[in-house]
Every structure is written in structure tokens, then in C-alpha cells.
Length: 132
Ligand SMILES: [Zn+2]
Image (cartoon, rainbow, N blue to C red):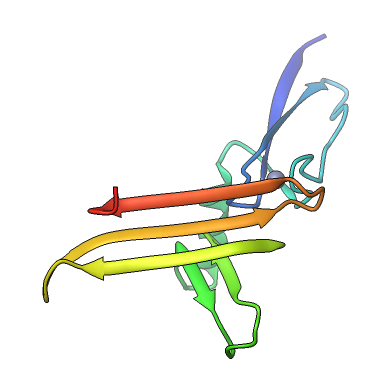
């Protein structure tokens, strides 16, 4: 009996867990739908989840921003999206961008710390330019 594996990728840009299942000629043996790491949806297919998300936004005729931070007022919880995915269970959000002079950007740092629904702490930290 021929067996192939099928890959599922978590839709959450901060997680991107990959789940492989063995399928047979009879069909899917076991189709996972929920990410075991962060409990968000899994995307099935060869294309990676980033492409899936950007295609989804192309259809809506808008590009997916890398990072959005929206703060309604000073008492609000910021709404944060990273690569099109909403960041849930936020612990700490930092954004720091500066210039070296009036014309040139100097550096960029952003930090996203959040929990998965099982309580695991996740931290993404990116430093570009002079912030490295
Ligand atoms: Zn996940």
C-alpha cells in the first residue's frame, strides 16, 4: 500500500508548527485541524502558511503588513497582528524604531511575547540595522 505524508502548517505566524500525517490510498488516515502547540487552525497543503495568508489578503486587494499595533486609548489592550495573524494572550509588546539622522533609518527592534492557550510562553525578538 502506498503511503505519503501530508503536511499541515499552523496558521499562526508566531507558531508555524508543522504537523505531518501519513495518508494511505484509502484517504486521510488522520486529519489534524488544531495546532498541538498553540491550538489555532492548521493549514493543509504544499504552499506555506505565509503564502496562504498573503493570497488571502491579495483577494481582498490589500497587502498583509508585517506588524500592526493598534491602541484605541491609553487604557486599552493593544490589538497586535503579526504577518496577518492576531497575537493572542499577549504578555509584552515592544516596538522601537529610530533614525541616525534626518534621512536614514538607524535601527528597528520589535518584541512580541505571548502565551499559547496551554500556558507556554513564546517570545519573538527581531533586531535590524544598528540595533543588532
Ligand atoms: Zn500553532
